[in-house]
Image 1: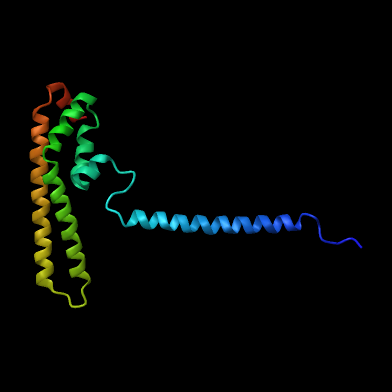
Image 2 (image 1 turned 90 degrees about the vertical axis):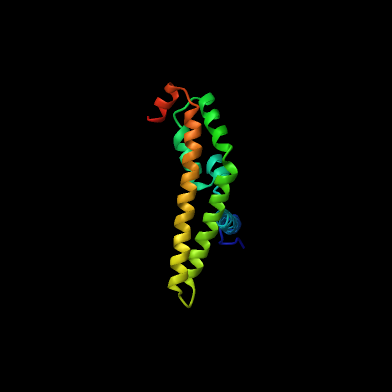
Length: 154
């Protein structure tokens, strides 16, 4: 007696199992990757300046040098790197203070005075970081020839 099931049925079942296993593996690996990306300080596609100087200073450096030729770009980046430790310390202090503010805002017993003080400290850190970044940028731009400074405005 000949079976009434088509000969392709077992292959189809194997294909369905293989696709299911592939889907589960991809979801697992995607979840691991997303979790890793959400729990690190720096995104993999960020520029090296953001990684080196912190988010705000790094983005400012990116914006500043985007129209410069390589020699001028190197001069500016090297000049700003002389202030890199200070900028990185401000970036770290701002991240830590941001976490402190989050904890105070999420606390079961809200302490308005402590939250106001934490926000005031965050503003002071931001102001201090911007002053240090401004000083570093001015020192870097001061070394550029007039033609390069014109390209900064573009």
